[in-house]
Picture 1: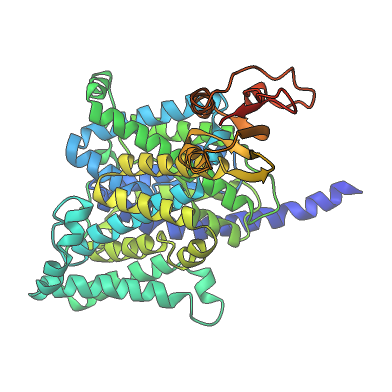
Picture 2: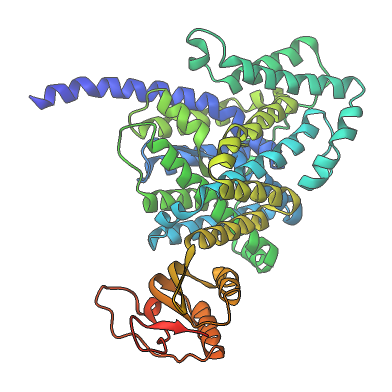
Length: 513
């Protein structure tokens, strides 16, 4: 009885996957091209990465519905690498990243990327968004960006006041018009906004406007698919002796892997199909990046915009993402001249809009109210990326997240009980070096004309630094040290090491004056 039902469902699934692949393809084309141009490499390399993401990574196990390709989140990092080390270094950089991702997936490290603080990830994306906006505003105006994120931001007032002449005004109008189309398109009534992607509409309208009115704006330089590729050879691996390039490899690996796996978790919440196997997905991403590196293309990640479009278009299996790679390949092979008609300014406008969406403006206020520490980590990570670079900013964010977590989990409570001729201070929670100032200040503020007993029996954890400091305080106050008998309640031995009270009564304590 089940076979006829399966046969009836199969054509419907095929048609849904086919239509979804068309939608994803239409979303992918302007983004692949725009990210490549913004990264400082030929436009065709963005399409190559999208093709590899569809045909190779799309066919591998891991996540069933998320789509891979060049990501706006890596644009800044790629541009910095290409500017510092040259386009020739891109291939070996992406290749090394892919091999490292495959290795991490094989040893089961994929699931640990889920342990990265979401505040760090959102701060990373916000920082990328700010740098992306600041650089692409110059491209919108037909000008060259000064360089670093901070310099770009500082130069914006001069950029806005310096938009004069027909080329600059026309280019700015095209970019601003693209942003307006992207904002307004989804607000239109009817089904059309859901069927036709906004980026495609923006690029189509801008390209038509430039052709009809013969506007003096720069268009994409077309080199041809084959001419844009550069095979990575063994000699290129010598470039990895540069410490700066090794740092870029680590940054690529961390950011690409985290973005892919966080995207997988988000996509899993959008559908009720098979869940993502994180280690297999990391291997798939690494395999794709290895191939992209071999041909000198852009790095690949799973991308939430195209993945969401895939799910919302009704995709049922991985066939939709594989087919989207087929359509990209046919477009790159048969219609390369179309790229030469697209204005650079409209792609800059699309990326400015994409960068703005990376900044969690609406989520920041409730995050500040409910989890202030997380909001601080997010903002600090974003600002560090703008002021320094991607790798340094992410490392700073991770460090702050670890310190914040350590501070929150090391909460300790001190209860002071003054009875008769003795003061008893009971500690509960976790006593770590982070709380030593509070503990010692409390002890030193106690009256010095009576004995003080420090009860540690309710502590969950007592680290070495805190224990040493308390023993020193007790010795200075005339106490003695001994171990508590073996615990019978399963408490860790480190947490029950204590100093005996002078009278020998009750549980082991740190005894003072």
